[in-house]
Image 1 (tube, helix red, strand yellow):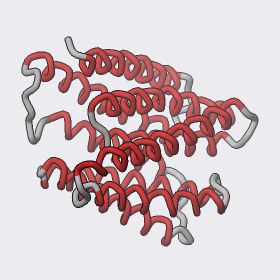
Image 2 (cartoon, helix red, strand yellow):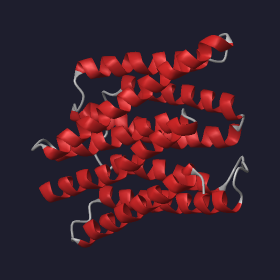
Image 3 (tube, helix red, strand yellow):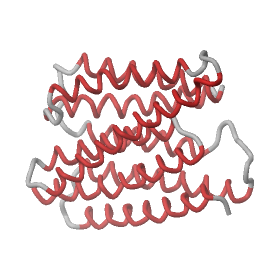
Image 4 (cartoon, one colour):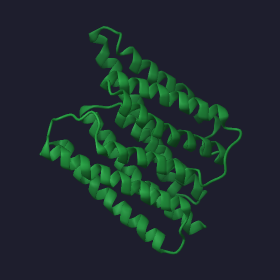
Length: 258
């Protein structure tokens, strides 16, 4: 049993506990639409992970260009995006949404360059783009991030895409340092978002802000996961796993405040 299977088992166990926690939250009588969509999202990724776990055990090391677990991932992103759309729309966030869509398109182009799987990557990108654009719009509405953080993301995202693209064209001796720089950028931003979400969750601040920050941490952890390989991928998977109980706790805080 390889390390990826072990971490997938751990991931599956966490997802199961989060799903049961979401069901318990719905049984409390306060059935918020956001919590319902989140419960379905966790169920989708749980089934996707179980499928991939079984496939990885039965056919280790065999790559399948298109599999049923991809549908579960698309459902996850679409349902999380729908959970965010239970709040009001943001007419003034067009610039931020456009930038989020452009960043998603750049990510899709990189995925295709790495894997060559056009259909899978385009469909995954469309689902993830819907989630990311919905998230950015709601963060803008709630004014969760101050202006300097928006500027920081406005610099980090293009730099990340530019560096990842440059790796295809630069000489071999320079590729590894540049690749490590990209990993440092990815994991630094992920750590900042996770710490920020934890702090907001523990504070007496707005519950909706905790939800959006937890969702933002998961979005960036997903980006990190899709841009990683080897042990970096496993580290990104751990970060992504931590985001699910974090999102549940944030939703629980929001429901309790309501």
